[in-house]
Image (cartoon, rainbow over all chains, first blue to last red; front, top):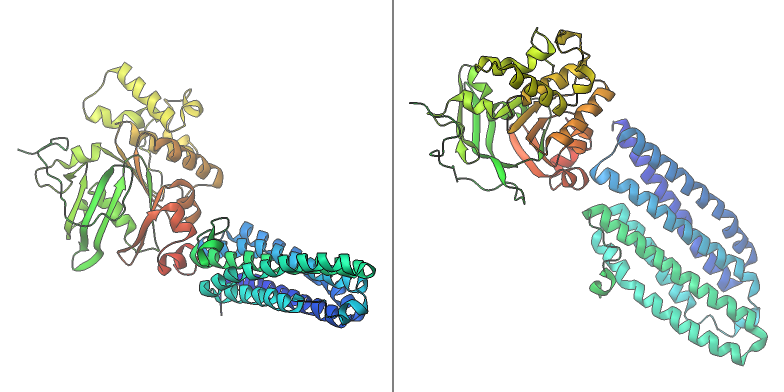
Amino acid sequence: MEPSYIRELEAIRSKFVLMSEIVLENAGSAIQALQDLDLDLAQQVVDRDKDVDRLENEIDADSIRYMTLRQPVASDMRLLTVCIKGTHDLERVGDEAKAIAKRVKMIKKETIAAATLRCIPEMAENAIGMLRDAVDALEGQNTEKAMGVIRRDREVDAMNRSNFEEYGQLMTQRANEAQSLLALILVSKSIERIADHATNIAEEAIFLVSGKEVRHSGIKSKVD
Amino acid sequence: MSHTFQQKEFKATESGANAMPSSQPDFIKIRDFDFFYGDSQVLFDLNLDIPKQKVTAFIGPSGCGKSTLLRNINRMNDLIDGIRHNGDITIDDYSIFDPLLEVISLRKRIGMVFQKSNPFPKSIYENIVYSLRVAGRSKKSELDEVVERSLRGAALWEEVKDRLSESAFGLSGGQMQRLCIARAIANRPEILLMDEPCSALDPIATGKIEELIHRLKEEYTIVIVTHNMQQAARVSDRTAFFYLGKLIEYDETQKIFMNPGQKQTEDYVSGRFG
């Protein structure tokens, strides 16, 4: 049987994984609700965000308690700092999913019917895929996978810029759908932010494995 | 004719790799060092350089050889029958094992503080000046100066200046240990060896000793053996991790506790074994 301090650390890690699963499911559901204009599913996303917030508080409290009582060092300490920072990113992803879900009711059927979702489904698939890989990289201590996540962030950024331009043009042509189109611009921005948080978690995964801080190191330009 | 330690004709032993490149001058060099109690080898091929005026911590589980190595630095192990060694330890590039070296001259350069404070059954004052009296120095003004300097150096002067003639046994545990540090620095050594100096002290006394270690390194090269991981992290600049008589890793303390290079080190400092 593992010693109690290792079991406590594993419990914190497990909560982090649970939180990431809920966030991933919520982000996927928010996009599904958008595509289907499913207000019930959108409301479920909004409701489930409370679980995400609760887990963030729990993981922070558990981590601080562990640091105070167990005085961890080396990779144990890095895991806890990564959990604290990573839960902040996950919570923000949860907020973005909630924001997308709340915008579903602002979007008219005809806007969706006119296939103006453009690359939003593909962009969302990329961003949520990045988040999945970032969490896997962290859990599996896989720096290669983490680097792959960082590499893909630029694609999502480019899609977001493209959406901004295209929706901007459409707003001049289809003034009666302006509110829907504005909502889609904001959805695009939320998806782009999800990819940014996935990138942060990937950087944390690299720190966890190597002890090297890669934030603000220009790593995004180096991995291309 | 025997030699004193200061004589320059002793040559450096240059064999062995530098185990810890450092911006500080390396003061104590341990090279290819094996140590045996009779037929039993307890230290294996140790190579490490200890920089001047820094605190170097030796950590590792019981029986790993850290205290044995510490006690080799001032040749305290000479008192044990059947010991032998291979390799060399040099201080300032002079071999401490040179057959012509007077061990007393070596020990004048090295103060030692033990796990259990061991004041002499004498007054506080006489504890400090004991070694000076043995060396034939008896001028009162000089002895007074040494007592005040040493007690101030050990952060004890203000607490005992009005009762210097009282028995050292009337001091608290933490004060006794600081008295032993004062006694160790009375002769102005260059090196202080500390073997678990806080293991018998409460947290407040431990804090005082640790603060003292921070100040003492401005003048002395300090090597400390400790089982307390947090203490090694708090007080030392370099940390050497030993296991089963072998040096597993030696690096900046920050590196050892934040991101060690060896899994064995990681497992030990994070409490997974030992």
